[in-house]
Structures are given as structure tokens and as C-alpha cells.
Amino acid sequence: MIYFIIAIVIILLDQWTKYLVATHMQIGESIPLIPEVFHLTSHRNMGAAFGILQNQRWLFIAITLVVVIGIIVSLVRIGKKQPRTSLALALVLGGAIGNFIDRAATGQVVDFLYIKLINFPIFNVADMAITFGVVLLLLDILLESRRKGA
Image 1 (tube, rainbow, N blue to C red):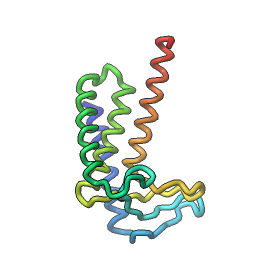
Image 2: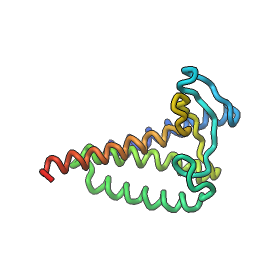
Image 3: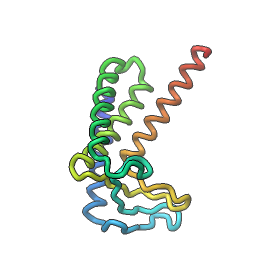
Image 4: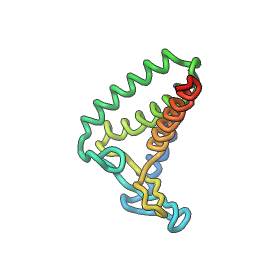
């Protein structure tokens, strides 16, 4: 199923980029790609988005397992019948598993993408996939409600 392949590609890309950062950069090291705008900055996050709920490793692992199982069941059920929803779920699934691997293995997530221009919290490929997936799900809900005339 194409949606599981998409999730696997996200997991592989996420883990590969995190590996490169973890093996080639010191924590706190920052490499400007576009000075004062966008940097690669090696960081470790022991919490969730924006660093909330620090040191709650087992809570994140439990929640992620429930979410991953729910998404897999949903993807099997809807498959190609709802391609936009399935794509969104595949993005969230890949991102969730990518960050889950870090949390399960080390208790912390490798983050490295930093938009310095707006001082946005440092994030990673998995975070982007989750964000895009959630936005796509919300867009899907909006478009579906408009289509039904709600």
C-alpha cells in the first residue's frame, strides 16, 4: 500500500538526517545555511512540541503506540477510498514513528532545523511530517464539510 511506503520513506529520511546531525555536530553547534534566517542547530528535546512536558518519556511512548495503532487501523480501513486523508495519516504515521524511535532508544529527540529569523523552536523532519499531516487533515475536514454544505 502506497501510504505505508510514504510513512517508511519519512521514517528513513528522518532517521538519516538525525543520524547525520548526531554524528557530525556537537549539541548546541549551529551552522548558518542562510545567515540570520535558517540554521542547522544540533539540539536534543526530551519533551513534546515546543519543549513542553519535558522528561515524560513513557507517557510519549504510550501515547505514540496508541496513535500509531489507530492510524494503521484507519489506513487499512480507508486505504485508497480517501486519498487525501490517507496521505495525511501516512505523514503523521511516519513522523510519529520517527520521533518514537528516538524516544524509545535514547529518551530524547534529535532536532536540528532552526528558523532563526523568527526564533522558531528547533524541529526535525518527523515534526514537519506530523505538522503537514495535521494541516492536511484539517484541510480535508474543511473541504469535506463544504462539500456536504455544512
